[in-house]
Length: 163
Image (tube, rainbow, N blue to C red; front, side, top):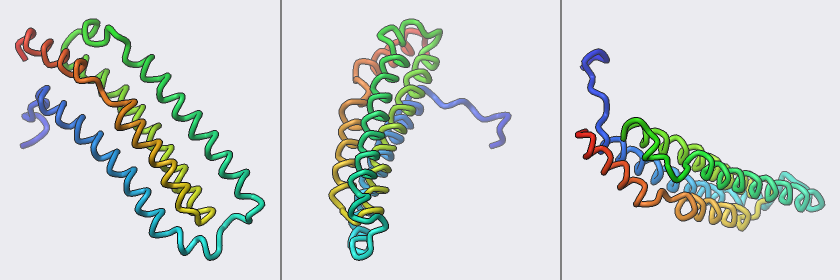
C-alpha cells in the first residue's frame, strides 16, 4: 500500500498506540534499573567520581530530577485543561492534544530515571538508579496516568460525530 491510498488511523488505533507508548516508557524505565543493577558492581570497584565529589553530583542530579518532575506536572495542567475534549474541533483533534501533552510529560518523567542511571554509573551505587526509577514509575504510572474519563470523553465525542 502506497502513501497516497493509506487510510488515516482510526480513533481506536490511536488510543491503542497511546497505551502502547505509555507501556513502553514504563518498560524502558525498568530497563534503566536493570542496566544499573548489572553495571553497578563494575563501577563500584572503580567509581568515576571520587567519594568527595559524589554528594555534590548526586545532589545536583536530585535537584534536576525534582525540577524536571515539577515541570512535567505543571505542563500537564497547562496542556490538558479541563475543556480539552469539548473545545477541540473533532474527537481526533482532542485525542491528538491529549496524546501530545502526555507524551511530553512522560518524556520528562523518563528523564528522571536517566538521571538515576547516570548517578549509578558515576558512583557505582545501585540504590541511586532504584530511587530515581521508582520516582519515574510513580510519575508515569500514577501521576501522569491519563484519566479514564478523559479517554472515554474522546470516544463518546467520536460516537456523536459518527467516527
